[in-house]
Length: 132
Image (tube, rainbow, N blue to C red):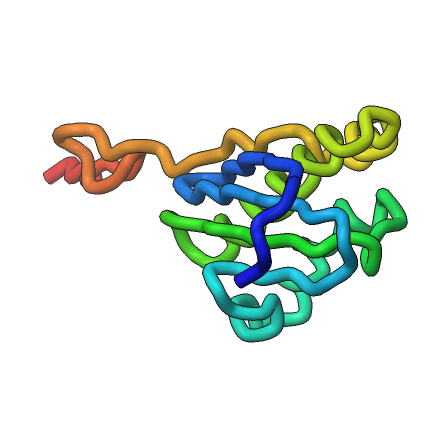
């Protein structure tokens, strides 16, 4: 872990995943649940998704990021971390808000799985109609 010092906080959400992000001002890597980014999210696509707010802010090697993420699956967690980093960057520097907003990084993706309805097999799937 890192020594205690001032950090900028952001909470990101996606589906049922919640990420608490701490953005430290000294350079370093991205640590997610105590693991480095490459270990926590092995796929390159997930890593790109998470690094996107830092790339837009042109701050990939300027900050170190510490994340605690719970709930959901891997894709939901990656989206939550991305959202949290973007929010923390806005707390750090308000002038980044327009560029992050334009890329859609500050908008919470509200798409969640629809709940199952009684009498149906899933949320909308009905039993097949039988004429005879």
